[in-house]
Length: 334
Image (cartoon, rainbow, N blue to C red):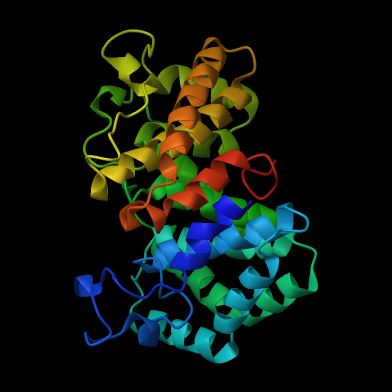
């Protein structure tokens, strides 16, 4: 537990370096903490958000967490009505900020607070409510109606954001938002066939567009529909060149590091997607193949995630926790 809390606790309060102009000191303006008094750490806003999710989820799932007092004090210091008001004001002036990746992770954080039956969770969610409302409005007006999905392997991936929106809507029982997210997912992806999985990864990916899409569609389609969709979507992943989808990305953390650490995140996100899809396929021929591949990705990803390189410490631990606790509620609730 302490290892899962160490990096998020440190980085949520680490203002520099920051991605805005690659700020390196408090003499550079504007200061991240002035624009984002809650989510200023972790190099970028979305990483600060999912690091808070990581800390809250640990408090919910792990009784007598050894860092409980420090986590609570850290979050209490930032979760204030004034700070939320300034975060909302920034979105009022910059409506496209963090679309859609950061929006999805923020809704995941709110869903986690909703699940946690604790007075602190109730208080924190109440404080965040104006920002929750603002981001939910932006999701409805600026994300769900877009004409087509973005199939990239990084932050702009539409399927990954839809996953977060859908899990939030189901967890918080917002049926209208759930229906809108399902409609968008079907419109974007239901007719996809023969996905070119051999092109993955394309660069410093941290998501698999193919597997992220499949992980979304298992939430959207009923089991017979999903099996039929999988048969049309995936080529024969047991044969070259398509079998590369099953192989974990290779990275020498000690010699590469930096942005190459995205590939560690790729192994983690592929692990949870492969496992989720496998679990939805029952006795389908791909179920056992994906499950074995998920284990290989998880083993390699977790082994390399705990690095001393800030390019990894500012974001990888939440991916580890997502993988290790994917069956603990709030993620793909049925």
